[in-house]
Image 1: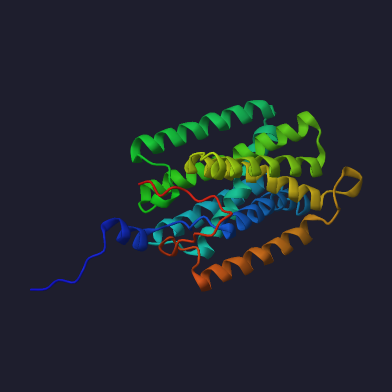
Image 2: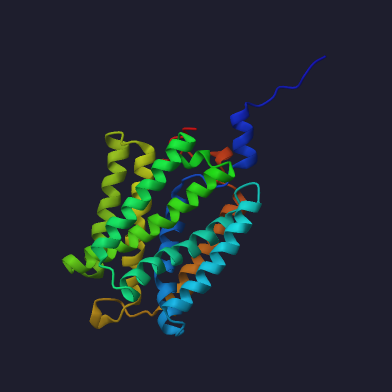
Length: 275
């Protein structure tokens, strides 16, 4: 009896159960846009709409819980659902830090240290249990739980660290944007130039894109007398959402960010597929 060739188990698992996108240039562009929306949307709901910090947090957390339930229920990466959660979790991470600093008066240096410690603990537990931190291995519910928990605290840490640097050094929005862009550039050069571990490079860049996106959002939305462009949160949110929707629609149609169709284009920080 002749049997048809069977694909290796790892290949089957990657095709059938991959829950995250490949890390391409589209990944980083949408992530930065989502981060900027996270910053401006939190301000829009909190101040412009008058929800207040507490009510905004309650609504956002409820939306995040429902969205994550949908994400865990599906069997593979769905661009619309995945990136919607990134936007919502960006807002949630921002609000966690804002609640601690604004409502409870916790200093930014304390929140930065605390979130860094929590994130290290999440990564440590993830690695001890699963033996990898590679996002290319996200194909089980437990690994996905670690992944989203890490994502949440990268946003919280990025918010706290970004606010701390901006407050301590009073750089202003433009120079803060330049600083964080330079750090990401240094991470990229370290990865491609001196072979900085791909997993470390990925997560370092992921954290830094949070204050980068926040600085971009503040630069665009804040009044001109405060050093911004004065475009307002409403216009910026709409514009960025439109771009995100267009890019997600493109990814949905072309499937270029599916792990089974890995993009080998230069210029992106791609994780090592350690599993």
